Length: 261
Image 1 (cartoon, rainbow, N blue to C red):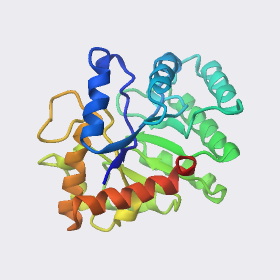
Image 2 (cartoon, rainbow, N blue to C red; image 1 turned 90 degrees about the vertical axis):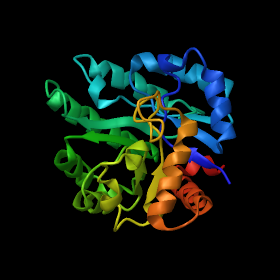
Image 3 (cartoon, helix red, strand yellow; image 1 turned 45 degrees about the vertical axis):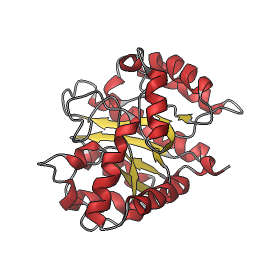
């Protein structure tokens, strides 16, 4: 039984020295596929170059990360939208998109606009969303409510909120929560937050190179390490690791319908 890492940036410079080995280790750990969210205009080329090497193992997305929304965001979005409109494009989702007001709110208005534009793309093109949210839960829910009737699907990536926030996000029926290495941390509140969340609403992710799980915490994260998250979920839900893999795989196929073909 294998599983999918639904969120990994292994096209980044952190992996330039050993990217091939990282992919070999991922396969050896049981990873069947790695999904690659884009970040900004500069990451498109390295992401596509890596995808071209491993088209049966990797799946790219197209979107502008909220922390990369700057003065030129409209031009960047125009280019990304154009890519998504091209026939036969390889992108399985609009992502990584969202809102992040944690460090800096300089471009708060622009972030809100960029996020809403990209939500509309997902609706128009029938693509799922890969959504990043940090210190912006209320604003995120407000935007999503406006598109509730659009039959959107997607992942609320790197979920780390409260039980109440989990339930607020799960009201969007086509969406699942992305769970990664934070679940394994000693002081993590995630196990409690998941207490009323069924396994049918979760997917596995790493966010590599960030947020490596215990016992790899402090190291560069990579897809192979997601197995530690699988095992922790098995403990929490009192099922086998294979059952976690099977159910989360089904969840991935439900959200990312183009992966079924």
